[in-house]
Length: 249
Image (cartoon, rainbow, N blue to C red; front, top):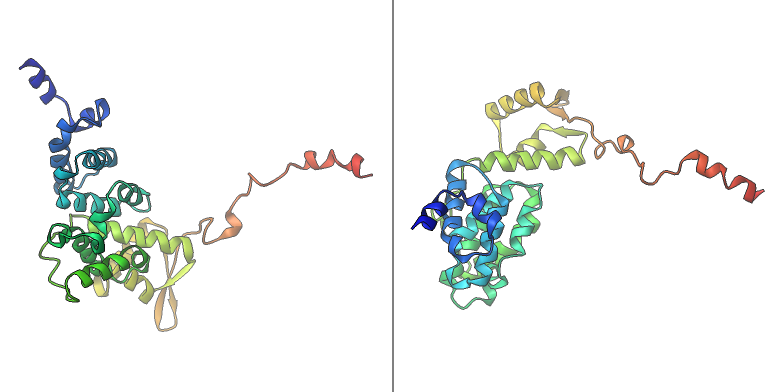
């Protein structure tokens, strides 16, 4: 009895740190995933621990919980969390073509499809999700149902995807036409005007007139301005070069 009361005083983080492979904490970890969705928090270590436990006890796997973990991992990009989670999920759960019980496994790809259509303007997601979309369509006889009603995306998802889209644009472009930015973050009209005003005031964006549309000048970094990159690891100090002069002469 005293042991159970002591265990209740531990947080989920404590349980994961003490014994991440204890199957007795599986239910607590599942509840913690739901708490992350409702409270808009995130704990990668706890989610990875749960996926590992699912590997040891596949009969206890909850497809809904796995889907929520993957969605939260998508929201953490550009961190590699999404790939880390995928490596711990059995192939048959993701690939419907190898699953006999389609009804059991259909929810997980439906989450990817919902995500795909929600951010369909983001080219960065096409390589990740296109194969899953195709598999889901084939498994459903070529018909896409109302997937959004079967699974609700967590709060903050749109903002997280917009942040990642901006991150990718800032790595690639020095200047971005307004229509390109609007398509990438799926915002138009007055909402886009307010979005640009906010980033001009807080993120160092500069708004210029470019013909019939605006052009957004993104902050300089070592990726969109390669001349800023310091190749200190590849450089050789001059004094080291001078040491070989006597040998050459």
